[in-house]
Amino acid sequence: MTAVRVETRRWIIEQPHDSVDGLKREIGIREAAAMLREGKLVAFPTETVYGLGADARSDEAVKKIFQAKGRPSDNPLIVHIGKREQLDELVSTLPDTGRVLIERFWPGPLTLILPHRGTVAPSVTAGLRTVGVRMPSHPVALALLQEAGVPVAAPSANRSGRPSPTEAEHVWEDLAGRIDGLLDGGPSGVGVESTVVDVTEEVPILLRPGGITLEALKKVVGEVRVDPGLQAEAQRPRSPGMKYRHYAPNGEMWLVTGTEADMMRTIQRLADDAAAQGRRVGILTTDERLMRYKADWVVSCGRRSEPESVARGLYAALRRFDELGAEYILAESFPVDGIWFTVMNRLRKAAEGRIIHAERSTSS
Ligand code: TXA
Ligand code: MG
Image (cartoon, rainbow, N blue to C red; front, top):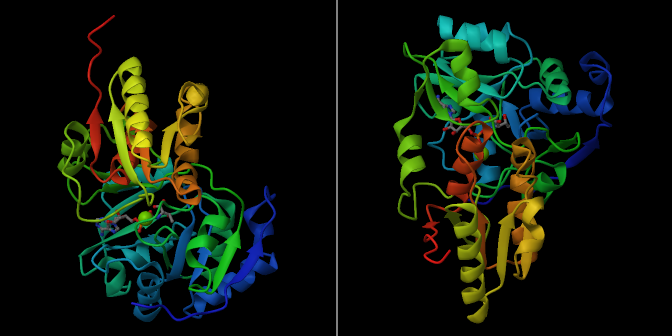
């Protein structure tokens, strides 16, 4: 499917800005909001990643999102709202668990799956009876959504399969000439997508780990079930070639697990073997260990001592390997609690199920 070539407007919004109301007076926000109301495609920053927005009520507008991204149309989109009242136009019921999660986490990186009331375009929900809704906390996103006044369907603003964009420049690389506008509000803060929780059942179900941790959800609603897909994945690697290619760099990426010493030794050995075969090798690590590997490229995604920094830097690091032309990428693994759970989920997807369990050292 080839998208129509369009001219992409780009507005820079200086950050930090004093208030959402102040932002609404910015010409860039007003023009972008008008474009959304006209059924055009506008990319904008959120606190998680950049989103590619279109009027969620217009099937024609939403279909252009799938075209621009090259996204399979059976994957539903999240609807973004700028005011709490807009939720009532979208969903038929709001269970108590949903209510308390909204009170605690909105605006913020939490998407709730709720029964819809037929007001969003069928292409948003991929024919499901539910819709995912969130109110982002990024001031530029809030100003845009409030000024547009329409619910905005927005997946991450990357070409399908590529790492999600955490800077306007990433969006530009992927989508310039395929979308009508791009609001540049600087780097997004959290760096990984929103947490998706289905609240249509008595016990909420975590469908996608994200910026809000499982532990934080449980503190608010008590019990939370974790989608079996996520658990199975967490325990044993699925075979390569899962349903969708996701967040993946162009090179062949492997995630290496094990104790620190075993993992590092295994990564270096595999890097050396690949280099001996003439492959251009990248290693994904953190600031603390940058100097401890030898390869064509050793790239840091943040500081291991500060998990939030790794979430923030992960996608840019994955994109970096593409820029460098890495053919074979070895990634360190992380713990699985808190925000690490989200980081590991994305790393596994980026590696498309290619996981190596480092062998225990037999010598001491
Ligand atoms: O942080 C985010 O959520 C970003 C920013 C732009 O807001 N958006 C984002 O959208 O990540 P996207 O399209 O890349 O991911 C949407 C996720 C997918 O995993 C999709 O399957 C799920 O939400 N989803 C959407 N509607 C759903 C529904 N009705 N039922 C189950 N899952 C749904
Ligand atoms: Mg995405």
